[in-house]
Amino acid sequence: MSSAEPKSSGPLIAIALAVSLLAFFAAGEEEGFVEENYNRSLVLMERGQFDEAKLLLEEVLKESGEHLEALREHARMLVLTSRGEGDLQLMQAISQVDRVLILEPSDWRAFEVLGDAHFAQENPVPAVAAYVEAAFHGERIEEMGKKYREAVAMAREHFGAGVELAEFR
Image (cartoon, rainbow, N blue to C red):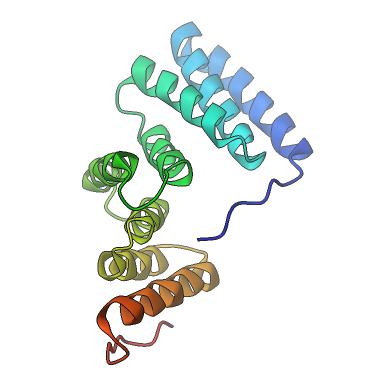
């Protein structure tokens, strides 16, 4: 998997702050702080500050219980900060994404995180399946196709050149 490049996040910061202020006033103090921290975590992710984003998302989950977007993005941070295929964070990420998919079975971002977690575990077959689901339900077909092809290449490396999988479209 390629490492995420930090992006310019000037407009994103302004949007996140505006959304968090609206959430604060609309939902009350406690829920406002939860949404504010969630939005701050998204800004940190955009900046490539994955450890900091993960900590903020843990606070959001502790305060809110089952904030599905925070649960999914926390799983993404677990994958991005994992230390390789044997890292228990990857199992935790898979478990969290499974919880999200039970409640939101067409969440393409959750399928993408699931594929990334399996790919990081060097488990290409479920990664391929997750990327196909992400493409089916999602918007970033080209990016999912790239991840799909990387997972297929890993499957061929693990199981031999004779592995045949349908062409991704």
